[in-house]
Image (tube, rainbow, N blue to C red; front, side, top):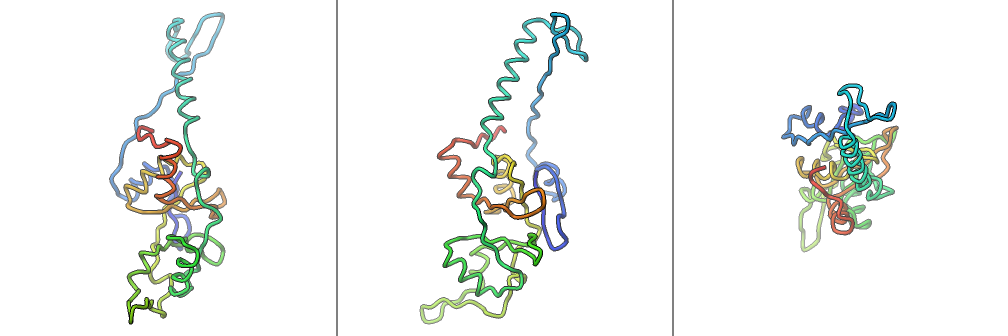
Length: 211
Protein backbone atom coordinates (compact mmCIF):
# COMPACT_ATOMS: atom_id res chain seq x y z
CA UNK A 1 0.00 0.00 0.00
CA UNK A 2 1.22 3.47 -0.91
CA UNK A 3 0.18 6.95 0.26
CA UNK A 4 0.70 10.55 -0.82
CA UNK A 5 1.23 13.11 1.96
CA UNK A 6 1.04 16.91 1.92
CA UNK A 7 -0.13 19.74 4.18
CA UNK A 8 -3.72 18.52 3.90
CA UNK A 9 -2.83 15.08 5.22
CA UNK A 10 -3.11 11.87 3.21
CA UNK A 11 -4.12 12.80 -0.32
CA UNK A 12 -4.25 9.27 -1.73
CA UNK A 13 -4.31 5.82 -0.14
CA UNK A 14 -4.05 3.01 -2.67
CA UNK A 15 -2.07 0.26 -4.28
CA UNK A 16 0.74 1.20 -6.65
CA UNK A 17 -1.44 0.60 -9.71
CA UNK A 18 -4.38 2.69 -8.48
CA UNK A 19 -2.08 5.41 -7.18
CA UNK A 20 -0.39 5.72 -10.56
CA UNK A 21 -3.77 6.11 -12.25
CA UNK A 22 -4.66 8.91 -9.86
CA UNK A 23 -1.33 10.63 -10.37
CA UNK A 24 -1.61 10.14 -14.14
CA UNK A 25 1.75 8.48 -14.58
CA UNK A 26 2.82 5.52 -16.70
CA UNK A 27 1.47 2.26 -15.30
CA UNK A 28 3.03 -1.19 -15.46
CA UNK A 29 0.37 -3.88 -15.24
CA UNK A 30 1.26 -6.80 -13.01
CA UNK A 31 0.22 -10.27 -14.00
CA UNK A 32 -2.41 -11.47 -11.52
CA UNK A 33 -1.68 -14.59 -9.56
CA UNK A 34 -4.68 -16.93 -9.26
CA UNK A 35 -4.76 -19.50 -6.52
CA UNK A 36 -7.22 -22.40 -6.78
CA UNK A 37 -8.77 -23.69 -3.60
CA UNK A 38 -9.89 -27.31 -3.62
CA UNK A 39 -12.18 -28.86 -1.05
CA UNK A 40 -12.21 -32.54 -0.30
CA UNK A 41 -15.75 -33.94 0.07
CA UNK A 42 -16.63 -37.60 0.48
CA UNK A 43 -13.21 -38.81 -0.58
CA UNK A 44 -13.20 -36.96 -3.92
CA UNK A 45 -11.74 -33.58 -4.75
CA UNK A 46 -14.48 -31.10 -5.50
CA UNK A 47 -14.64 -27.45 -6.46
CA UNK A 48 -18.05 -25.83 -5.95
CA UNK A 49 -17.75 -23.55 -8.97
CA UNK A 50 -16.14 -26.00 -11.41
CA UNK A 51 -17.51 -29.44 -10.49
CA UNK A 52 -15.53 -32.60 -9.75
CA UNK A 53 -11.76 -32.56 -10.12
CA UNK A 54 -9.42 -35.42 -10.84
CA UNK A 55 -6.53 -36.48 -8.64
CA UNK A 56 -4.21 -34.84 -11.19
CA UNK A 57 -6.10 -31.55 -10.88
CA UNK A 58 -5.73 -31.68 -7.12
CA UNK A 59 -2.01 -32.39 -7.36
CA UNK A 60 -1.51 -29.51 -9.76
CA UNK A 61 -3.47 -27.21 -7.46
CA UNK A 62 -1.31 -28.34 -4.56
CA UNK A 63 1.89 -27.70 -6.51
CA UNK A 64 0.62 -24.24 -7.49
CA UNK A 65 -0.17 -23.47 -3.87
CA UNK A 66 3.29 -24.61 -2.79
CA UNK A 67 4.90 -22.45 -5.47
CA UNK A 68 2.87 -19.42 -4.38
CA UNK A 69 3.81 -20.07 -0.75
CA UNK A 70 7.47 -20.10 -1.73
CA UNK A 71 7.01 -16.80 -3.59
CA UNK A 72 5.43 -15.28 -0.49
CA UNK A 73 8.33 -16.48 1.64
CA UNK A 74 10.78 -14.83 -0.75
CA UNK A 75 9.17 -11.39 -0.40
CA UNK A 76 11.28 -8.80 1.37
CA UNK A 77 9.22 -6.20 3.21
CA UNK A 78 10.01 -2.54 3.75
CA UNK A 79 10.51 -2.93 7.50
CA UNK A 80 13.35 -5.40 6.85
CA UNK A 81 15.61 -2.92 5.06
CA UNK A 82 14.39 0.55 6.08
CA UNK A 83 16.64 2.97 7.96
CA UNK A 84 15.50 4.01 11.44
CA UNK A 85 15.23 6.20 13.38
CA UNK A 86 14.73 8.86 10.73
CA UNK A 87 16.27 12.31 10.92
CA UNK A 88 13.67 14.96 10.17
CA UNK A 89 13.38 18.72 9.88
CA UNK A 90 10.66 21.31 10.47
CA UNK A 91 9.14 23.24 7.55
CA UNK A 92 9.90 26.44 9.47
CA UNK A 93 13.61 25.70 9.85
CA UNK A 94 16.05 27.70 7.76
CA UNK A 95 17.76 25.80 4.97
CA UNK A 96 21.12 26.60 6.56
CA UNK A 97 20.14 24.33 9.47
CA UNK A 98 19.25 21.52 7.08
CA UNK A 99 22.57 22.00 5.29
CA UNK A 100 24.45 21.56 8.57
CA UNK A 101 22.39 18.47 9.40
CA UNK A 102 23.14 16.88 6.05
CA UNK A 103 26.86 17.45 6.55
CA UNK A 104 27.08 16.38 10.19
CA UNK A 105 24.78 13.34 9.94
CA UNK A 106 26.10 12.14 6.56
CA UNK A 107 22.61 11.68 5.12
CA UNK A 108 21.05 12.75 1.84
CA UNK A 109 17.30 12.88 2.52
CA UNK A 110 15.12 14.23 5.30
CA UNK A 111 11.34 14.07 5.62
CA UNK A 112 9.72 17.33 6.69
CA UNK A 113 7.32 16.96 9.63
CA UNK A 114 4.54 19.25 10.80
CA UNK A 115 4.18 20.22 14.50
CA UNK A 116 1.97 17.13 14.98
CA UNK A 117 4.69 14.92 13.48
CA UNK A 118 2.97 14.21 10.15
CA UNK A 119 4.81 14.22 6.84
CA UNK A 120 4.26 17.39 4.81
CA UNK A 121 7.30 17.27 2.54
CA UNK A 122 10.79 15.94 1.91
CA UNK A 123 14.13 17.49 0.99
CA UNK A 124 17.44 16.17 -0.30
CA UNK A 125 20.97 17.51 -0.30
CA UNK A 126 20.55 18.18 -4.02
CA UNK A 127 17.61 20.48 -3.28
CA UNK A 128 19.89 22.59 -1.10
CA UNK A 129 22.72 22.72 -3.61
CA UNK A 130 20.61 25.09 -5.70
CA UNK A 131 21.02 27.67 -2.93
CA UNK A 132 24.72 27.18 -2.28
CA UNK A 133 27.37 29.52 -3.66
CA UNK A 134 31.16 29.47 -3.56
CA UNK A 135 32.86 32.50 -2.02
CA UNK A 136 36.64 32.42 -1.70
CA UNK A 137 36.59 28.62 -1.79
CA UNK A 138 34.01 28.52 1.00
CA UNK A 139 30.49 27.26 0.55
CA UNK A 140 27.78 29.70 1.54
CA UNK A 141 24.07 29.00 1.60
CA UNK A 142 21.22 31.49 1.42
CA UNK A 143 20.17 32.15 5.00
CA UNK A 144 16.73 33.70 4.55
CA UNK A 145 14.95 30.78 2.91
CA UNK A 146 13.04 28.20 4.91
CA UNK A 147 12.50 24.51 4.27
CA UNK A 148 8.87 25.09 3.30
CA UNK A 149 10.10 27.28 0.43
CA UNK A 150 12.10 24.53 -1.26
CA UNK A 151 10.75 21.16 -0.09
CA UNK A 152 9.01 18.68 -2.37
CA UNK A 153 5.36 18.11 -1.48
CA UNK A 154 2.92 15.29 -2.32
CA UNK A 155 5.35 12.81 -0.78
CA UNK A 156 4.84 9.17 -1.77
CA UNK A 157 5.15 6.83 1.22
CA UNK A 158 4.60 3.13 1.92
CA UNK A 159 3.75 0.98 4.93
CA UNK A 160 6.22 -1.38 6.63
CA UNK A 161 4.74 -4.49 4.99
CA UNK A 162 5.07 -3.21 1.41
CA UNK A 163 7.05 -5.48 -0.91
CA UNK A 164 10.32 -3.70 -1.67
CA UNK A 165 9.98 -4.73 -5.32
CA UNK A 166 6.92 -2.47 -5.50
CA UNK A 167 8.89 0.29 -3.79
CA UNK A 168 11.73 -0.13 -6.29
CA UNK A 169 9.26 0.25 -9.15
CA UNK A 170 7.83 3.43 -7.65
CA UNK A 171 11.29 4.93 -7.11
CA UNK A 172 12.23 4.20 -10.71
CA UNK A 173 8.98 5.27 -12.35
CA UNK A 174 8.67 8.53 -10.39
CA UNK A 175 12.40 9.29 -10.46
CA UNK A 176 12.61 9.72 -6.72
CA UNK A 177 15.53 8.59 -4.60
CA UNK A 178 13.91 7.94 -1.21
CA UNK A 179 10.57 6.84 0.22
CA UNK A 180 9.44 7.39 3.84
CA UNK A 181 7.73 4.46 5.58
CA UNK A 182 4.69 5.15 7.79
CA UNK A 183 2.68 2.95 10.15
CA UNK A 184 -1.09 2.49 10.39
CA UNK A 185 -1.37 5.71 12.41
CA UNK A 186 0.45 7.70 9.74
CA UNK A 187 3.56 8.02 11.89
CA UNK A 188 7.00 8.04 10.29
CA UNK A 189 8.84 4.82 11.20
CA UNK A 190 11.59 4.56 8.58
CA UNK A 191 12.94 5.56 5.19
CA UNK A 192 14.18 3.56 2.19
CA UNK A 193 16.62 4.89 -0.39
CA UNK A 194 17.82 3.59 -3.73
CA UNK A 195 21.01 2.50 -2.00
CA UNK A 196 19.00 0.35 0.41
CA UNK A 197 17.25 -1.34 -2.53
CA UNK A 198 20.59 -1.97 -4.24
CA UNK A 199 22.04 -3.43 -1.05
CA UNK A 200 19.05 -5.80 -0.73
CA UNK A 201 19.46 -6.93 -4.34
CA UNK A 202 23.18 -7.62 -3.94
CA UNK A 203 23.02 -9.37 -0.58
CA UNK A 204 19.57 -10.99 -0.60
CA UNK A 205 18.68 -11.40 -4.30
CA UNK A 206 15.14 -10.16 -3.70
CA UNK A 207 14.36 -8.02 -6.72
CA UNK A 208 12.35 -10.26 -9.07
CA UNK A 209 10.66 -7.85 -11.47
CA UNK A 210 7.91 -10.39 -12.18
CA UNK A 211 6.47 -9.89 -8.69
